[in-house]
Length: 177
Image (tube, rainbow, N blue to C red; front, side):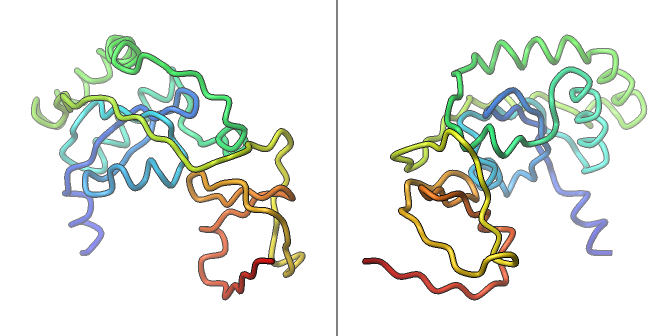
């Protein structure tokens, strides 16, 4: 039953930019989810009635842009600034027939324009890595290095990166010299 309630909450289908990517975010998770993913830009495109409808819209958009996060690209920090409103309009036109079909099935108010401005995010990173290597506490419980930044859910060290979410339940001790 809790799951059904979750699906009835408003969701947003948005364009996030580390590179051009589409994602689904519950309205109450914006911009937290985008920060976690390391997005440098985001633009809500549609408001949808249910999680199911947001999934249908995401599938339609994913035919034209990625729907997976490339975590290595996030951390390299070489993101171009995109004109998200123009990209959103291009994608909306590209999926117009899909949107019409979804509205026919679920009602005209199942998908409405989000009518929000694009957002830009920055992260405290003094040096982006050129080669990405990931620390794994399961393989090596002792990690050392100089913290170079935080981007999304990643701590960036001069020796590699740590995905903080991956090790959420771990007990970690940090020290400095």
